[in-house]
Length: 242
Ligand SMILES: [Zn+2]
Ligand SMILES: [Zn+2]
Image (cartoon, rainbow, N blue to C red):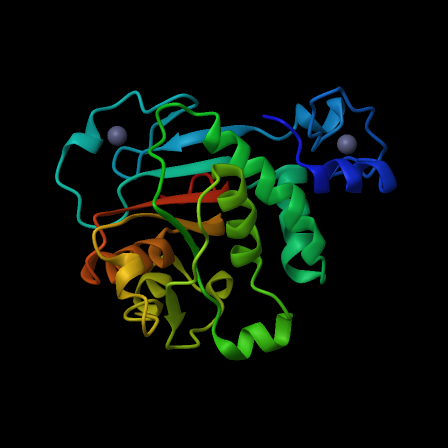
């Protein structure tokens, strides 16, 4: 994929450095370099992740679960497993006021999807919203920043479609069952978003997929608003929690 003018401009004045370790990367003619060769081997790609049987596939799923009836999130794509250096990188992006990291993380995820010929192209890309209080506290919605970059890679529109009506307790401090109960009716479709939701294939973006409760709830809200299908893509999927 050709590098855009703005990316070439940024690369000229700010030579690309590895997203993980920060060392300078020598760019190829067409390369949007995200990682140095050493760190690249430590970011383990997930690709497609089956929400039913938990199998994975870089190009597409090896199972037939998708053919069954869908009631929530239809497909899930993960850039990499939530572990090691990738986990530390996403933690830095989310909790240490580093919104500019969204440029590389979002492009990384967007490129993986856009190069995957089996992944369905969405009509619209949206993000898991933050509650207003949390947005004020953090200063940015990390998922929305990623979604904008993913939409750019897919050459499609990004639209905020949901709002969070309940400021639920941080998921990380809860057990699996508590997390499930904590998420009921958290989202609502934004006023005037009906046209963007109804009949559309929507790609929902979040930074990290843990239990899947947040994504499923958001997908159900979009489906009850008339969406044709909702697929999800995340920067990382947590292993061994199912
Ligand atoms: Zn590196
Ligand atoms: Zn399966």
